[in-house]
Every structure is written in structure tokens, then in C-alpha cells.
Length: 330
Image 1 (cartoon, rainbow, N blue to C red):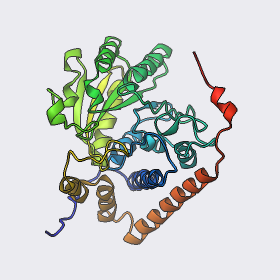
Image 2 (image 1 turned 90 degrees about the horizontal axis):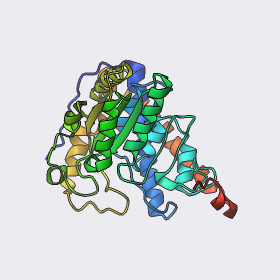
Image 3 (image 1 turned 60 degrees about the vertical axis):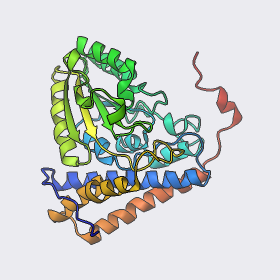
């Protein structure tokens, strides 16, 4: 069967926006691929959840917010860190469990934070980002600082009770937050079609009076358009808001998941026809914003950044034993 080209959707994004999006999405993809390789070589231990396939979601939404706004997410978090501007060397060092990591080698893949980048984690408990992010939004409301909080979680976490407690409180006080459900179809391994009574997750806030949109999370323009609309409403005291991003993860739930609940043909079809990075690349080429040679140059530059981050991490020292007793709060 001959592979058909990606459908090239029209783009309203400017040249710089599309090129920046391509750079950031490609950085996430190559970084995650390197993380997967390093995990296989035993350089990364513990849990490791890769963001490959979902890059358009976080990169597109970062294009809609201000530097003073906040981001909080679950354990599939490396892409969010990089999109927020965190240093790839620091992120990779944390994955390697080294002292130069963002949590000094003690947090690993799921627990990294950066106040400078307004990134509040990285949380290992399913759905934990939702009440914590709602608390951040409450703080912003209390301080009247006009900041918006982006709260990411997955389709599996959307069935957690703490999510609906948060929805209730957020709507009660019209908190300035956007709940972003990254629906990659399979949660930890069970299809949404089998696990959720209400399959349109954007409507999970209806009983609380929370508006929601279902968005093509594989298309950067669709993400930006929906994101800007939601941010504008929330920043003007019309929050909270729900965005369900229809996306897809190419790898298993974590590195230990063989993903036997779906076929290789299904994954290949998404890669061939809906890959978010190929979509952006095709838009750039069709608008003549860059040539194929320019794209190759970007790829080489990104590969170099990722290789440097891995080399830096491998040379970073392990945390000393006394570090175990620091940053502990009871």
C-alpha cells in the first residue's frame, strides 16, 4: 500500500510562530527518543513516561499564555518542562539521577519543578495535578495578579474523584484555570471507549456549569485557536474552562508497557497520517517559510542539543549521601 501524504491543513500562524513551534516540538521528540534509548541502556531508572506523539498540545498552549502564567501536569511531563523553557541538560540530568538535575537527582522523571519557569511539576499520583493546580489558581485569584493556570491531566485521570471536587471549587469561585485533558485514548492501558461512560471528556464539567471544547490535539493551529479562546475567557473572569485535546501516544504508558492492547497498524496509521510534527513541517514547506535544507539544518541543531544534554547528564556527579536528608518536610 502506497503511503498517502499528510493532509496539509491551512495555517493562520505567522512564519516565526510556525518555525518556533517546529523547533520546540522536534526538541521534545528527539529528547524523548534519547530518554527512551538511555532507559534501555540502564542509564535511567524508575518510571519513565514518554510524550512522543503529543507534542502539539503543550507547545501550542504555551503559545497562548504569558510568562507569569503557571503550568502543572502529571508524570508524563518532560515535554511540558522543555516547552516551558527549562534547560534540557537539567531535565536529562534529573532523569539520570544526577546532582545537576532540577531536583538534584532525587525526583527522577516524575518530580521536577522550576519556579523560574513557573512549572509546578511533574506529579506521580494519578490526577494529583488537578487539585494542586486548582490551588494555584485560587492563589492567583486571591492575589488578584491576573495569572492563568494550565492544569494538565490524562483521560484516565479524568475519572478520578478529586478531579470533580476541584471542578466544583473552581466554578464556585470562578478560578482562573484551564483544565487540559490530554486524551491519548488509552490511559494506562484501557481504551476510553471501554472505561468512560461519557466519552466526550470536554463535557465532564457540564453539571458544574464549566464550558468545554474538544480539540484536534495533533494540529498546532487547532490547539492555538482553542487555547487563545480559553485563555481569554479565563483571564476575563469567565473561568474555569476545559479543553479536551484529542491526541495519541506512540509509545506505551511507560517504558515497561509493551502496549499489547493496540495493533502496530493503528500506531503506524496515526504516524503516517496525523503526526503533529510532520503536520507543522508540511505547513512550513507549503508556505515556503523554509526549504527542505533548512529543515535538515534544524534537525541537526536539535540533535546536537539533545546529544549535549545526554553527555552533560552522564558526566554530572551522583548526589552525595547527605543530600538524602535535605528538602524533607513533615
